[in-house]
Length: 354
Ligand SMILES: *Cc1c(COP(=O)(O)O)cnc(C)c1O
Picture 1: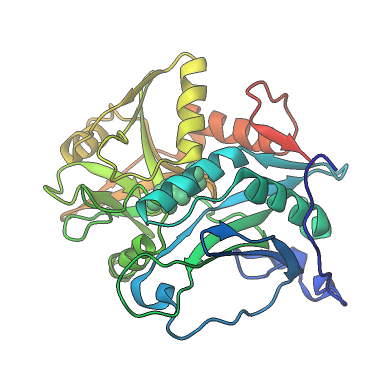
Picture 2: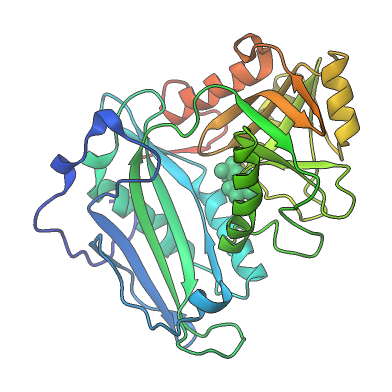
């Protein structure tokens, strides 16, 4: 073992044989074990690895009332030889702790997050599916646990990691609608934190878009609705010739994606001009109409790349070209997938092999 280990209470009978690995969805099945650690009196207690199970909470637990809850999402991949690969988990820890700061929650020490994650993955290594697009999805999260209805930062928390064998999230290209009424995040709000409440607020707009025949939304800025921000729960990128464009993080209304960060770095290394700046709805729609925009896609851990096939704006439906012909997004998707499954050399030191 290359790291510290925590007390383990093993399952008595694995659920593995009850899961159909040929019909995995995203986030539906859960592996045998989970990690749990409690924060009390200003300190984290010893983490425990337990059988996956329901937990006991006070009905007054503040997470249920005021939503002090944050999460992360990352994946472990396994190759035919049984080697396990984890992509940039240190970045997930950094982001979890910056979400924690914004939500008045305690930071998680590296020794709990990274060591706990690795121990859990190794214990449930049989749960990692092998095959194209398949992975063990890892979901670390933290919730406020004080049984108290006063509005204040909780004094006690639970941090947990659960894991879920999953097939890929999206298939094919998506049809999205530019949302100009609702917004995901406002300046000064919690858009840059991976906070549960951001997702709750997005459900109604997403549902309405689905009723209109769209798969997802392109969020615009809350103030003017003139600038594009993210696509659903992914960061948004545009390729125009040799230029890669994406909205900037400065306003803190955009979630700082690890896929986003990695792709920007790769694009630069591959000789693309990388520009982080505001992109107006007009620039996007006109660029599609006059064919100066070549590719538009979402980026995130769940799907890596989600190419956009068509964009609805007001009464128009703007169609993009066939994404299978797109040069940059096809290349970067393949590169990241090969990297995350150990098929190519990890020249950036982004991968941990277990
Ligand atoms: C998690 C998330 C992303 C993508 O981040 P990755 O680290 O690349 O998975 C983008 N936008 C939102 C709103 C998110 O919650």
